[in-house]
Image (cartoon, rainbow, N blue to C red):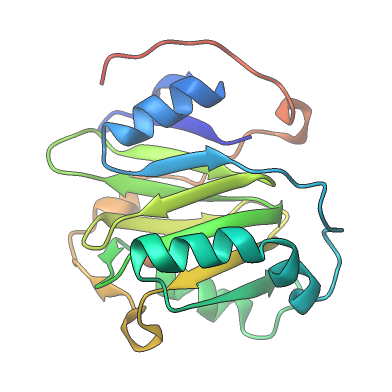
Length: 194
Ligand SMILES: [Fe+2]
């Protein structure tokens, strides 16, 4: 279950949301799509081709609706070679020339969204979360302390999915404050006025 936090300029949490409806509503207000998808179709440790086959209908649907030409499965663990360098590419505010779309199979990480003059919104994504960050959205990403995530990725143009850094430095004011494991599975019904 994703957890959304709205952060003020001192990186203090002002509001936290974990209920699906509130998360979806809060993210929609900054132009980001969010859904919860079924995880029971395939084991989280299944080979990538089995994962892609299990979600073939959704993959094909998105290809038709959004022009996503390819999909793959990314696996990141603490043992992934070059993990620090990989994370360093994406933990600074950037945009992409195509959408960033992920369905989280296991593990967790945080997207920080910086849309217009809106306060920065952090989204902790976990297994079962599907998220689409439209092209041009200022954002950055990092993993939680377990440094592990597995996800399906969609691409509109594989050559275009590279970070274009804004150089704003906004990202330096925010720590990756993931919820602790004890919070996993908990739900809240906090409303918010963004
Ligand atoms: Fe990105």
